[in-house]
Image (cartoon, one colour):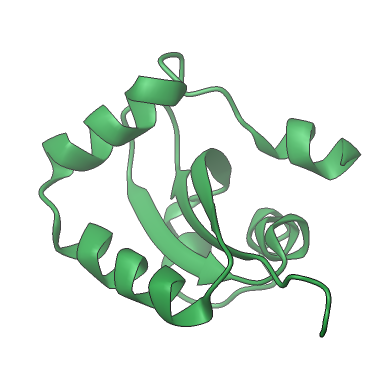
Length: 100
């Protein structure tokens, strides 16, 4: 058996209460770094969405993708409530995971 893979569904924000982006990845530190350094063309680069404000871990890629799609359909208030349950100050969690 392989070591357990981990998949992450994450939310980036441009600032507290700002523009939100939801994504999925198997390497959260690398992916958020790519967004922060503007290596990722498109939405996050255009809107400066680089603050990691929420993430969750899944052991199954299908479950992670399903969750990402579900969250993308949510209205903004649900997303904000999810962020603020664990991260009421919208702290940038990247510093915590990058030390990892």
